[in-house]
Amino acid sequence: MATIAVSRPAPHVCLIRFDRPRARNALSRELLVETAAELDRAAADPEVRCVVLTGDDAAFSAGADIKEMPDGGIPMWGQADRLRAWKTIERFPKPLLAAVDGYALGGGCELTTLCDIVIAGDGARFGFPEVRIAAFPGDGGTQRLPRVVGKTRAMWMMMTGEMIDAQTACAWGLAIAVVPAAETVARTLDLAGRIAAMSPIAVAMIKEEVLMTYQKPLDESLSLERKLLLWQTEDHDEGIAAFVEKRPPVFKGR
Ligand code: HXC
Image (cartoon, rainbow, N blue to C red; front, side, top):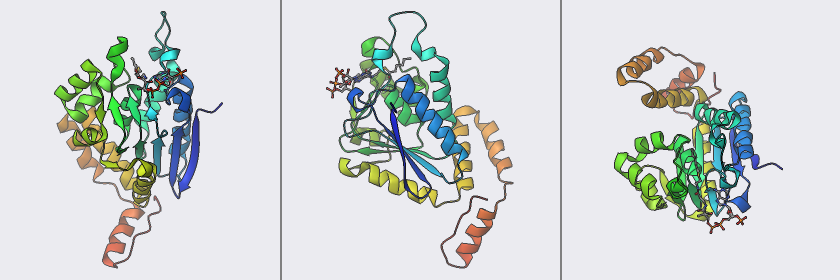
């Protein structure tokens, strides 16, 4: 049975909804692999310019599927298809947004830190409860969370396992906005639509360049940014022409 539901609610926008409501959308191996496969399809499809991840009212995702955790042997975290799926999500080249209602815990919260922009419903709760089962946020959380919220807040979240509410998540930079829960998905789709109206090439360049800050020393990423200034596209010409002619631009992704 599929663990995600995929739709195209607006032009150029793909919505991936986690669909394991009875397990609080826990990130089973199957859910991760299906999500990664869908992202691969979205990456290759020029019609898709922006992807939104969401869950349901109760949970964006309660994290790794604890019931899949083995008693011993090779930890499931190290399974190749699971690691490949996280890598695919991490490398997804187009804008990836999250509409978060309910719980975003553990791997579910790690997933939000991999998204480019997060919108939180006013009932959303973010947290890293791994420590309570004697685990740690090993799907990138120990590295990404401090970069988003700072070391002290990350330590507090991970060492206590306590949750923060949507307002705090927004104040700490985990989310860009808090909206009424009934509007979370619609507001995120609206944002996705606005981003999808931009030149997809420019948007992809922005994502690639911003992510360089996490991957390279500053002097290296600054010189790469300089080199990337040499790019030229039809969309860029169109953007300038539209500005001069006082009309909205039409970007074709060329
Ligand atoms: C598997 C889960 C689950 C999870 C919830 N469920 N979270 N199943 N994995 N992560 C299941 C419950 O067992 C239950 O199944 C059903 O979903 C509903 O959960 P309840 O607890 O009854 O719901 P509620 O009272 O609303 O509480 C929701 C919750 C709580 C706060 C999210 O379920 C919870 O604390 N879950 C665990 C969250 C967590 O520890 N996440 C981190 C996982 S580790 P039944 O069959 O009883 O109805 C991780 C990364 C590890 O993410 C990486 C290591 C390298």
